[in-house]
Image (cartoon, rainbow, N blue to C red; front, side):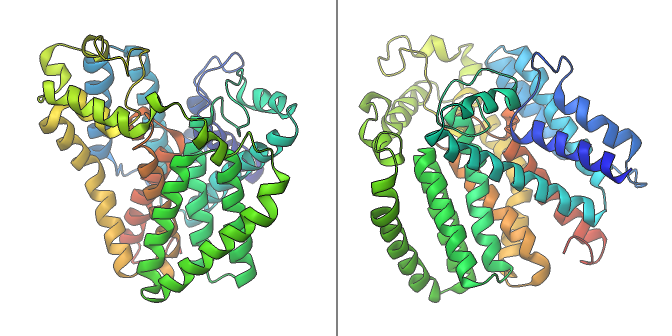
Length: 398
């Protein structure tokens, strides 16, 4: 029985982490197919539903953006299914079971680690694309990458993985050599993954963690990390990796017309012309970019939050953002106040991982309401950790 539970947990985490929804093989949405057996056959005895408010707000946000704003009913349906299934997984299957929660987190990050290893192999063995296509059951669009059809999608996986595994070595007091090895592995994944936004999220989230955790000593640790990074680049990466497929080459070859800063600036000009939000003017993105050469090809500013506010305006858009994130922010701030408590160690890792992936959305379109798998998992894992901890007098999930 335990093996059956573990199998379905892995399958559901696989569908969630890699964004597998409906393919030629899975004619039923994969989250439903793999999660419903867990919910109906192996759920915990608890029947309380924790996340009514969060679920309602998320569905309203998805409806307002995708149905009213984009007139995309199909995406609305798919995203709502993914969000609802994730809520049901945590609420009824994981519930107050400490082992199920910890094992879910373990499976999630092992899958992201596997994806990163596949990305590294993809640099040296192009035939790895066959493995990627087999696992995704879709034709891959960009290489080298991990278990994702595009490099952008893989970036969200890496944005969640890198801060978590490094911060984990600190809060769980792993030996110095393990810390160094994990740090260099993160640099390797980011360098070969060609993820400039992930580099920024990694630096911001880890530096912020070190400042809270070590205070003044963090300056010395960051200095050592910079030295190790330069040595790793000059003596390992520079001479042994294809100079055409790394983060530095991507930065040099970047199209200046698609510079993120320029795109955001143009988006802000469009927003200034429609300050109440596009949906209140009866317009969509194509209606407001026809005179704009930067967006002529149909691209967006690649800033998920800015696009959300551009469509919904400052009142509805910012209001929904605040309601969606306020509880997670409160949990994160409370955890940071007691950052050295053993029972908060896993929560700290999850919070800074979520911070990293949330920063990543400043440079891309996917985020929580688009049911991005890693973002969705981290959001509800933080809420669930806090909920169970508060109901069990801090005795579970540590």
